[in-house]
Image (tube, rainbow, N blue to C red):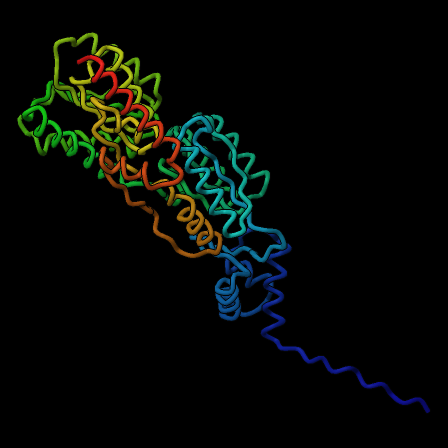
Length: 393
């Protein structure tokens, strides 16, 4: 007589089984899902599914978006972030890209960098590439405010975490400086220079703007105007003029060259620029016409070339506001990882800025290894100016 075989006992833990059901569902669907949908498809109680999801989010297996969708996150590949750089030809953008590459390498994130070429249309096309490549986070640094809603809509539809650098975009987490405060500090620096050097006089205050960047970036110039007005309240409103330098050297050079030619007798002209390429363009125009003594200029970004310019004897450059670009990489990476994990972050994330004048620029050139070639260049410029002065005596 054959012996009956006893069925093997399965040592199953119900909550573990339900957890695996949830994980496998999210993995198969491979898209953001609401709690109700997961509850209905797994047929587990809603309370149990909720607790499972919260545990999985805490342990990093699942991410939760701001609109309460859940997505499988335990991927066999490395995380991949997409970064749309403003322009490979712009020094500040180059510095942001270098900082971000270094930070991505440090935390083991793959970084796909595409050049937006200072063009809204190119930025739109690059975002479409990011979506095709299935990046986990998009970090967007592009100049055209009009392209922002188009870019934001595409990223939002793909349910991908999104960080906007310097220029706000809908649905995004903002990262950059406090533009108005940075402008205010620049304006106060100009006003103090006028008080010390020109007896508080000013015939014109020119703001070299970037109109296409939108109101937030334009508030750098608004702040600069207010900084001057607060310390020199006697100045007439018609003395304040905004021009669109587009943040480009050549555009700003042409605008200031034309303005100075039309006003040959004015000797007290302030210029606040939205970035240092515009600042350097304005300085080049003043230098070409021999009007350095009639102009005082403050910029934004604190580029290496601006640090060198601040060392030139007789320069019209008064200072530049440093956006501390060396900190961008690790701060952006921290934000990106937090968003990818479904953590809640502040909608606006500001980086500290500081005003840099000639003395501080000299210290930066002398103490930072990255500025060594620039420091040698600045020293050579000063020596050349001194030798010319000695030869003229």
